[in-house]
Amino acid sequence: MSPVVVIAVISSLIVFLLAAGTPFKPAKFVGQLCMKVLIGALFLFFLNAFGSQFGVHVPINLVTSSISGILGIPGVVGLAIIQMYIIV
Image (cartoon, rainbow, N blue to C red; front, side):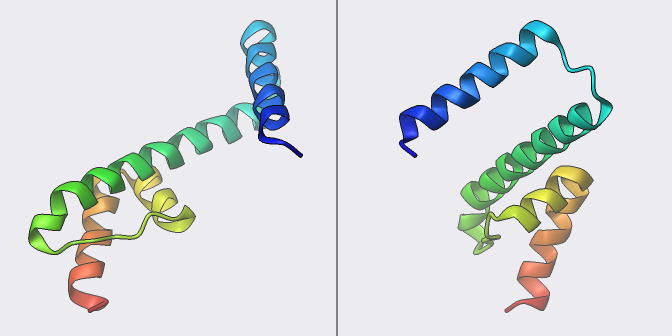
């Protein structure tokens, strides 16, 4: 499947959901969870950008993004501590 078709389908789905709303609670929950994972990835990006001066690098993947997105700043700090002291 070409990337143009994938982007068109996703864009049309977003426009449809914005126009019609999401009547399903599970869809709303999944959307909020995806948003938290994206915010967690953003937290980790900033940690890696600023932590590179101190030798801190936490890989950005689904597990670490989920942890930092759901737990917030304490999750990011916990991942950084785990990376610095446990995984050497």
